[in-house]
Length: 151
Image 1 (cartoon, rainbow, N blue to C red):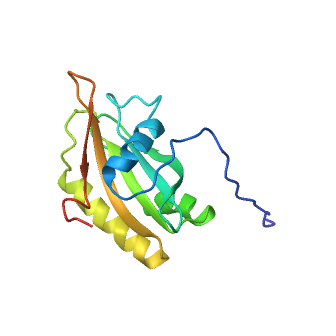
Image 2: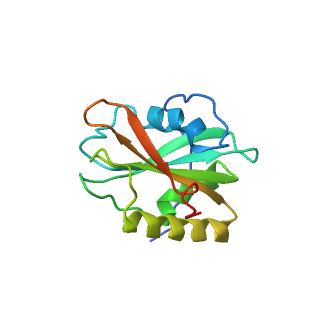
Image 3: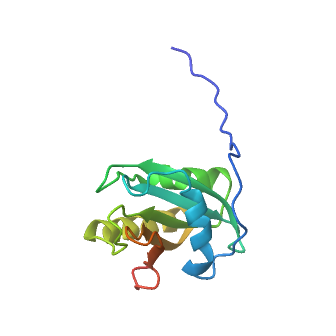
């Protein structure tokens, strides 16, 4: 069997509000926009914000879609876009359909694992933001792993 020639492309699918990643409150509107159209009350979505060397958001991607209580996330999916663009840093994000953004033990372990992978690649993981839409009022709540000292 003969090898094939491949080309990797970045395809623009929409726009995001401008943001610089100084703190989670600044990127929350970008995360909410990236989750627009997603069934955030029925499924978990795991995404990545791609950042320039000055930590400006240059893109976002949903890299995994799960079920009501979990999603499977692999480092190769998380860092692929950051390598292709190329980006200096990333912010991880995912939603909790339950309405409670409190990170699980699995969320904490995944954050540490992805931060270690980013360190090997030279792509800093600045934060992992867990968001949840309040089931009663429809307001977004969030928790920053960086603020919690996980990163």
